[in-house]
Length: 278
Image 1 (cartoon, rainbow, N blue to C red):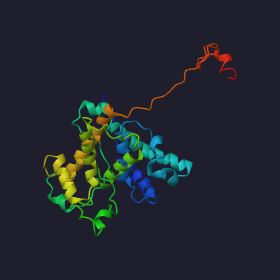
Image 2: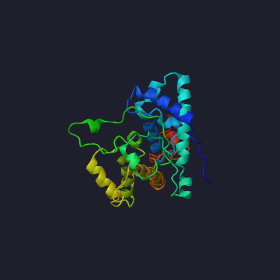
Image 3: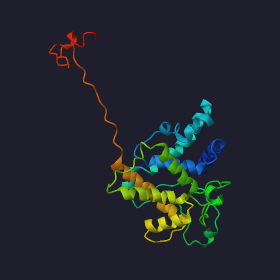
Image 4: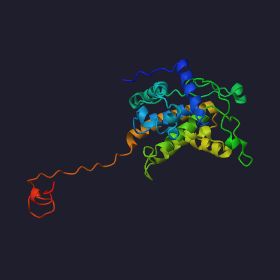
């Protein structure tokens, strides 16, 4: 039975946006879209994390620095927690298995104005609701005098989302374990990650080559890349069902009874040998 997915309302988005604006003062890269991508990576990972598992980790403890007041922090957790619960429901493995062709994940992404929008024949993806516009997009690569020129659709929808997704992987390396070399799903795993990373790739030639390799030589516009990236997120959720890192072996010491033979091999009872002082 598919889970009932809570729906993010406009008020929810505005509340989450307001929280992210406060965090931006400590880390200018973080915004609503970035946080949504970050949470999506955790929601599709091998473990079902709770809010308290990752909030203290992301941004090197950023949440606790921004929301130091207890009441303020509780209110912020409620706002973030609602979106977190929604993403976890969208990426519920059983529901995806019911029909893997259905795109369930509904990302929060900024909609950038682009000259390509009017010419594009593809409709705006319904799975990408509009949030408040951002002031600036990442410009590190685009502004560098030595860097390759940025793609024509830069800055574009999904840039921050992809960056947030990647940051979550870096924050939880013990979860995102690389496949064993030669594993039959090794190439698939890296292709799925590349589909998501493409949204933030500014290297024009490298990006085009990757698109052609992943999509059999077909050119893709940004809306199509976003759709494929979201399917990749769902496929990663399925991947981890079969490749979750094994928990460390837990060693449990056998308790020796006082009248049992001493483990040292002396032949004496434990209470008269090494257990005499116990």
